[in-house]
Length: 482
Image (cartoon, rainbow, N blue to C red; front, side):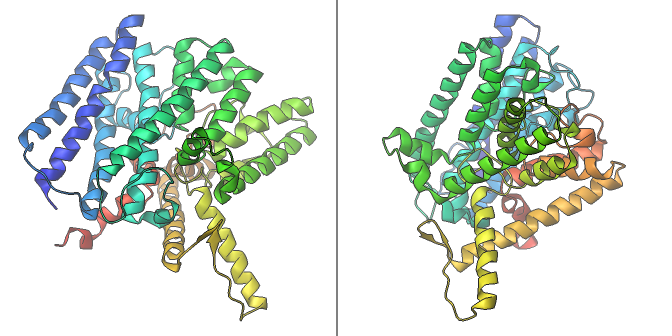
């Protein structure tokens, strides 16, 4: 690996990340809450550090190899988390830098787990930065999922290449830039539409922008302590739920729809499975809430289910009700949805719909072969024939995902957290969901977790967001051998 060239690339990433702090600086000036200097200092440090690396290694040029790709993705995301925590640190929002990094990484990985004990008394500039980290991280994840990870062969992602202008399969070429421009355009357009709809419903521009950033990124950071529940609005619940569902869809399909291919969504096997799973879960949650009399009527039960199912399955993490007080059956169902995630090529986290779909298909095929041992049943996702090596990679990903979940949950339990809090805190962070149950439930936060526990969860957020292999491969001795 070329350390000098990698330093130049990372420097460029950090430089442009620092420039993005200009937007919250403008918001800070508009509201005059006193956070402008903290944001300006953070921007100067970030831009200065990134710019220095670019200048020092400006003459370094080469194509990025796969090994370097892993390193740049993993380290770049971690560095962004560190520098993204500077605004919180300089404004003295948290008692420790660990909390600053936790909030920043949670934003960039679109997790939405927070260590803020009170949100509404924080200055507008910092809250805007908090939401912007979601939005930037969400776009970064879309680009990773569609343009970068397939080239690295991460966890079967090579199967799910987008049908938009993309890179060649052998090396990362300039066509990645074309992909990025296309996806940015779709991302900005859908975000703008949600902002307008929320403002038409009576939400102020600031809250509308912040919540739209969090929705499209499937992040979940809100400007209110009670999240969307604070508004107690049927209109907001339905608008945000619909856009959460859309954020869980492969953005390449949105692009094709906007280009006039009106059947692009339903023709996609992964989208059909995603839609049916969401609808079935909404019906199940509605029935459970209604027949257990949690809410007084069928509409109110449907309203809560229509919001809470998409927020969990897409790993957004917004809340419109305290589901910690719902029946135990729903605790189990929502917990399982944390492991599903959105479609490949979406901003959703966790395992991803396509992987879940293929795992179920292969299990059913194996059961059928027990009865008909001579039958030949090729595995397909829609019209795409799934190669054995891709399926093997998916099973390895699934096994590693569960192994990390169990190990990290045991560590959190050893730190003194109760069983439900320990397991759901890890499920919520490794799946980039946000809220869990019990001590990290929808009306709680992660502030009470011990220092070591927060770093474990930071690790979970980054590993889960970057499809596990991207980070774990750096820990292998063979990766560092020439």
